[in-house]
Length: 202
View 1 (tube, helix red, strand yellow):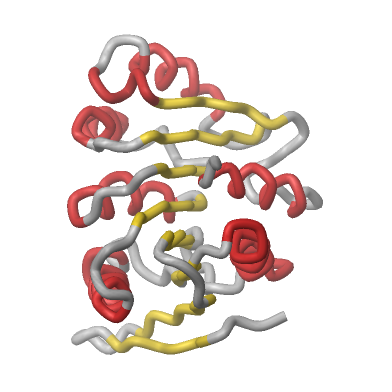
View 2 (view 1 turned 60 degrees about the vertical axis):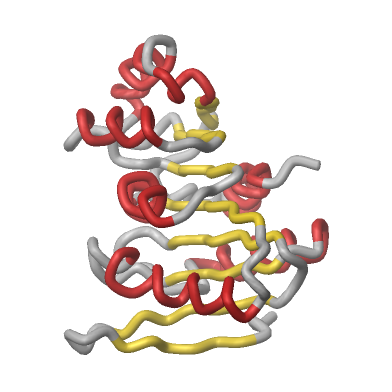
């Protein structure tokens, strides 16, 4: 199993950002890996997810590596804008983020792009929760949070639920927990892919 296209973009500071692309229709799903992760993922989970989304919905899928906390702002934005331009500019954007990829998606990606729907998996909540709340109030998108019951942030999920009942766009947030899953969904790759696949709902 391979991507249709694999490339490496080099930032001005020399950091390399690898990404894989599967060509499809005008619905673009962006998948951002967790910290230190490449665009394929452990057990090829991002690549498998991309192929499943394409095979099911015909969408275009762009998988992004994550080698720095500022990789979205200083690398991914340019890659995504180039793809949108190549596709003629009229697209629907969706976002899947894992761990730090979720954080960068919510805090950074929503400043640059309007997403129809986001799925954020095991986004760390123990630091800068106030920033997360602020980002959620301004993010004009549907968001589905997914947490494994063994994830370190699981004890903070009630605070997220409480905020979602009070704050603007937070009321549009959906929060689900997955029994038996840890931060990495170890041994549960199929469940991880299934949860993320809900980013598109026809």
